[in-house]
Amino acid sequence: MQKVTQLEVWMEEGPREECGVVGIFAPNEDVARMAFFGLFALQHRGQEAAGIAVSDGQGMSIYKDVGLISQVFGPHTLDGLKGHYAIGHTRYSTTGSSLMRNVQPFMIETMHGPLALGHNGNLVNSVELRRRLLEDGVGLSSSSDTEVMTMMLARSLGNTWSERIQSCMREWVGAYSLVILTRDCVYAARDPWGFRPLCVGWLPNGGYAAASETGALHTLGCEAIREVNPGEVVTLSDSALVVHQALKPNDPLARCVFENIYFARPDHVWDNQSVHHVRQRLGEELTREVNIEADVVIPVPDSSIPAAIGFSRLSGIPYNDGFVKNRFVGRTFIEPTDSLRKRGVAMKYNVINENVLNKRVIMIDDSIVRGNTTGPLIKLLRTAGAQEVHVAITCPPIKYPCYMGVDMGTQDNLIAHKRTVDEIRKMVDADSLTYLSVEGMMRAVGRTEGYCQACFTGQYPIDVDVQTVKTGFELSLK
Ligand code: SF4
Picture 1: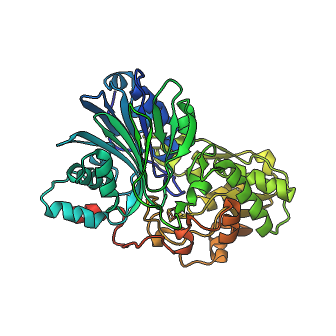
Picture 2: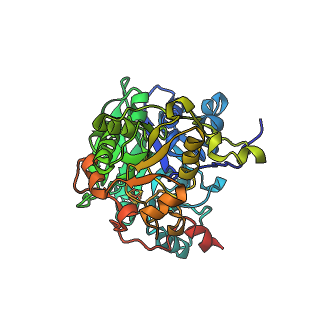
């Protein structure tokens, strides 16, 4: 079989997914296969690379590569991973590019035994932490902030891994939801701002699992699921589940509001709320802010479907499917031919002509980031005979980059940076364009505080050195 060395995620308009993590302690179970299926449920959070590390209480083994989970792992690779403890990671690169050397988990030998780490998020002080390690003579082999975290853990002070994790957490600034594997424990740790999700559950046959989203834990059959609260370290091992509040939660918290809008699977429960229901409420709130007469409401699948349902329910405008999405074509490793590439979004979306022909259409989408998909989608609808195309977006204009683990590009890449809504409307050729207000978005979330909204407002919940961008490490390596 040809080895995959390069992934192309083409035609990708939205903010790129972050990463997904799983951690499992399950005595007498095939933990590698469990980690595989847990990651499979988190594939939407990262499609560039995947890895699983396993410990049998004595030694640790790992397999990781570039590619989708089903491309990286097969029966032969999983059979080689034996043990009771596992962590897994599916990756979209946030710090460091898609090089093989950045693929997670990172695994090293330490004076306390083997150690592996998988990370969702991005540290904003990683350049400084990296410099300190290099000055102390620690060699680094990648451009990833996760390797910095791994090396810091290996040399940190403390009698137990729990104490060492706590001591490092005091120095890590930014977003981190972590799974950490040692010889005989799995740890799940979350930053005190609570940027990225992380939860744990009880396995029906004994043992515990941790994962980025509750949907992955349900896939594994978990019961009694709870969040790893901001600042907590949860230990999954032979003894009972141990919860340790390592750092005081920040007040206010800074959960990523974009998990609700776009990232998380709709079956995820985030901040004790169903993401699906929050998305429906985003659609309902949009109804209050869009004053347009129309014949049909259509979603841009998949993440906008609940919002379009909510919009339709409250407005009374009928819902229908307008697009059929090929969910996998943008994830292929196979380069399209030039003539296929020129078809652009038409490779990914087909219009159901009968549902839009001669109709005034409201197209609901979750976001406009770079703006290179919205225009072509509108064109597809017009070509299919839509009389008018009105666009309603379930979040405010994205004007500022994210430094907490979501790749939206630089400020100049963002279509809403330095442009008015009407200028954007003209660029994408919509009859009207409405973004949900910040207030409407937060009404749908049902909270007045505790969420990061920095990509809309520019008010970052932590001090950010804008030089600490995604490729900062690679620049410093040159
Ligand atoms: S800046 Fe936006 S995407 Fe990044 S953490 Fe904040 S809300 Fe989420």
